[in-house]
Length: 337
Image 1 (cartoon, rainbow, N blue to C red):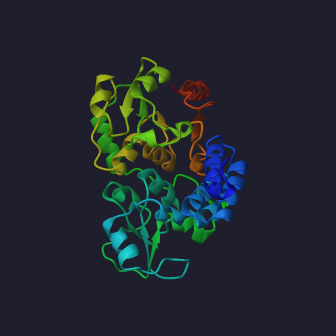
Image 2 (spheres, rainbow, N blue to C red):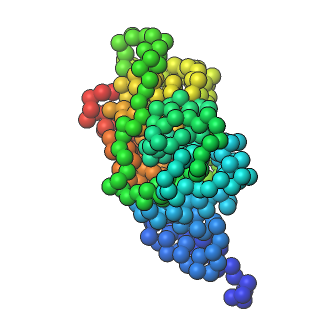
Image 3 (cartoon, rainbow, N blue to C red):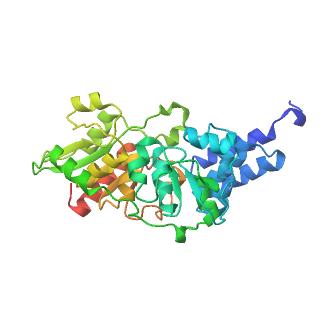
């Protein structure tokens, strides 16, 4: 029998918290992470605690601890952001008056979600695929001139957001000129247009099975079972060649401004947890179905982020049939597909 001195109780509580979290038992997860932190204040436990607080809707607390992630993972920001934040150590914004340079961070969907908090008085440092879409909420930075830098996910902490104070969509809008351009590209055949996204840009083998987001395209199409008078449009760039062989219309996108324009022309959008789902939600598309795993990320657990988006969540891990059944029920209710 092992001596108590040889048992890593911190890791035991961390593992138990992780398991509870992916069973959507957030209260138990929080207790376990707190117990782990009481033994040893390590970054992973604090990060998992932050995600748990966000999942519980305790946003002010969760966002305060968000920055722990950069103690664990590589910071996903631009080269300019890396230089200003890490190398030059520019002052980080805490709510003071001054010129604030917001650093786009994390995935593209995360950036779309966080753009709702950006004010026109700020300036934005964004990766190229996001620049045209983001420029409608604040000017893009043309230089390093700023009083403060602020990674995007720090803004909710500074603003002390609550579910009641989160700005609702639409807070982004497709460019009318791009809408016209895309309307000409896709034509008007009179068929119902269904915009779809089924995969992510990352291989998901590293994620917990309960949280797997992607749906193989053949399974997606089989479960969607779109009626014959409809036409499927890919809103993503991955697996383009394979999608074409399955009858999905595929186009090249210059950036997410193109995605927003094409999504706006769809009668229905059906997408997994992806940047495309965030874009459709952010522009206030009237009929969007979000296909979510059994253990979705915190941003989908509270409808305050995208109130009109219809969440179709797996009833059990990997049970995508149950999620698509909710899409079908929603479609019948709207008589739109």
